[in-house]
Length: 200
Image 1 (cartoon, rainbow, N blue to C red):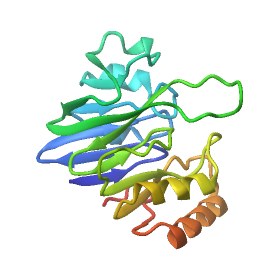
Image 2 (image 1 turned 180 degrees about the vertical axis):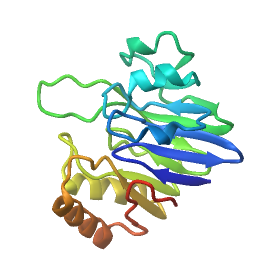
Image 3 (image 1 turned 180 degrees about the horizontal axis):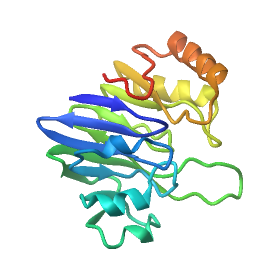
Image 4 (image 1 turned 135 degrees about the vertical axis):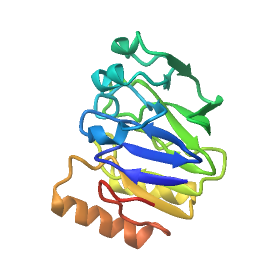
């Protein structure tokens, strides 16, 4: 399985000829979707899903039950719930979690699913839900209005993956990225920073 990191939370997964793209949001590069066979959406926020781009793509889209994505109505959207297993782009996927991490007391959250893809790649979306299945490669959120660095480090430790790569970092400047990468490198075994366009 080959993964290619794109800006913010977007990741392209290629396996046995299938191309699966996770969270192609408004900040990610359009080329992430070239040749895509299916798309996974963790939740409804625009930094994770660009509905206009997907409307023109015409491939199956998988999104959480209850997610408000009205502009996707003409597409073959499959609603997914936590605990469900399915195949997308020829790759086995299981859905985990259920809700977006709390941003601030009293602020509404939304449905959010983490996806365990293939032989153990886990994309949590905007949550720190630890799946009850083994994870080989963790995509660890690096920054967000809902996240502290300490929480991200403890999340990675709880998951215990052999490899970890950052996602959700588009709002960090170069100094912030360097700081987070430094902390992750010191505290998360198997951590390797992937810049947009890098593969693992």
